[in-house]
Length: 299
Image 1: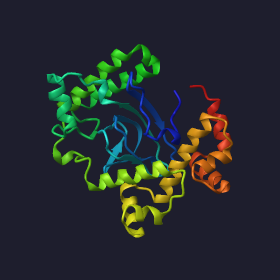
Image 2: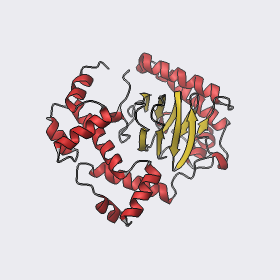
Image 3: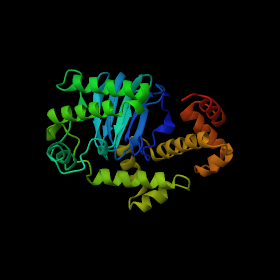
Image 4: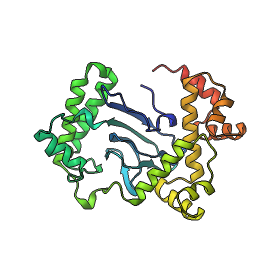
């Protein structure tokens, strides 16, 4: 299985498919960068096991120190990112799944006691399980089992993967969070505004995006917008726009044979030299080198 790069961080697509709504991501970050996973969110739930290194998880505006052996739980809709000091390795894998994979179609006791109570916010799950915390070891065992089955041939092991996922949900319910140690509520005004801004950028990344235009669109002064964006996303506006655009360019480079200049224009870059400079900054290679290398890499 390939290690995902920047182009796989866009969480606007379904993880897995409607027939089996689950995906396992393997991630080894570039230690020369501080921002390892940029701010994003998705409707699916995510469990992440940090296998190497240390850093900070940013979840709905809250910073949480993390280190090897920790397990993170990201609730549906939570804005999250991961950073680490330059030079520090950071390796993890993540299991991302849709709640439909474990939900009941009827309104039975399992749905009421363990699913609905969580989705309604009555039952709060912990965000970080440290190695010696209760519940961490069985969670780790189930995550490792899912990872192994997924890598082997997940199409032959759906029942076993689903069984392990239900086991994980059991331990999340058994060792819930208290309000003091939860990142909830997930949809306060700052989080909602952050989601609106990120969604606007993602929907209009191919167009001209300026600080003046964005601040006006969200009824803030330019200074207010810059301070708010940096505090919530942990990147400057220009850094995030470039990061997202280069990720989109990576997708397009691998999905067809369109010329690099056309892809650059379609991703919002009118200056091909600037596009090439930003691409090399984030991907450490030229667009042509990226297309050649990744097109030849077996799945």
